[in-house]
Length: 106
Length: 121
Image 1 (tube, helix red, strand yellow):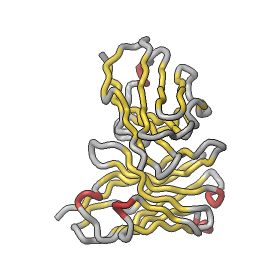
Image 2 (image 1 turned 120 degrees about the horizontal axis):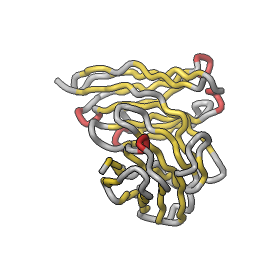
Image 3 (image 1 turned 135 degrees about the vertical axis):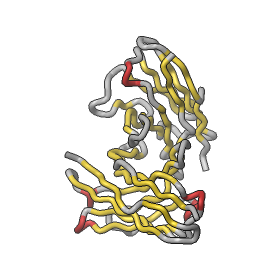
Image 4 (image 1 turned 90 degrees about the horizontal axis):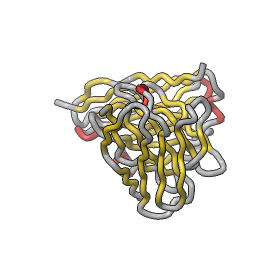
């Protein structure tokens, strides 16, 4: 199976900050990479699909980039509602998720 | 409104069985691959199983093969997960999710609210 490794595992930031989360695949997955946001006690929510396409209704401060093995999720200006855990997920082969990145308020 | 609602979770002893259900509404259920994804307490997400629109193809994560069975009833807009020989490590919130297929891969959207399965004596 393809292993997905996110970094950092946790991150403290302030409202207004620019934040970048990285996801690395153990082998090339082209652009078969999606990003989700999960808040405590809630289901995950799709943010970005196919590495860089913004899901309808998701604020434009979220963006994704990358291809091959290295991907990034960027939040251009953190808002209070963005503090959550973020997961990457590949669909190139047997579905796997990254371990998650917890974004906390500084 | 697009909605997925899971039910059937609960406390079960090791070795026991449980059947989860997921009721879909607000979209054409029969047009989508469907999946179960689980999350152990305090842990990350793990894909469990998925099923093609007509039920002709089913795939499972290795850890549940031979113990879990995914099925669907398109007439009832419902997805199911029959879980047998349950183990403590199956303890998790189980989410059902629709799989959207695009030009580049597929993604999960929407998700249900989840149902908690606890395997303990």
